[in-house]
Image 1 (cartoon, helix red, strand yellow):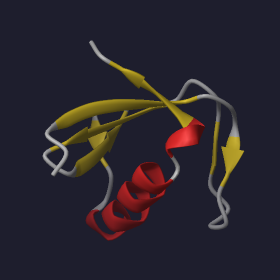
Image 2 (cartoon, one colour):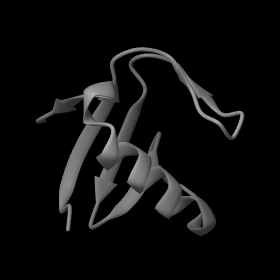
Image 3 (cartoon, helix red, strand yellow):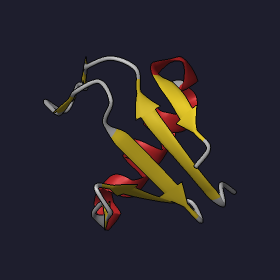
Length: 65
């Protein structure tokens, strides 16, 4: 379980779902729930983003605020 971590994209990326993100965008995981810009992602997108983030650590740098 991830209690609280902030993942910051190193570079821009485009996902197979037609979603694209700029470098520097932050993804927060709190108690295994994924947030962007302070908002929880929709429930049906949680597993997809959680797995994408945790399985691709080279795409992110950690923020230890």
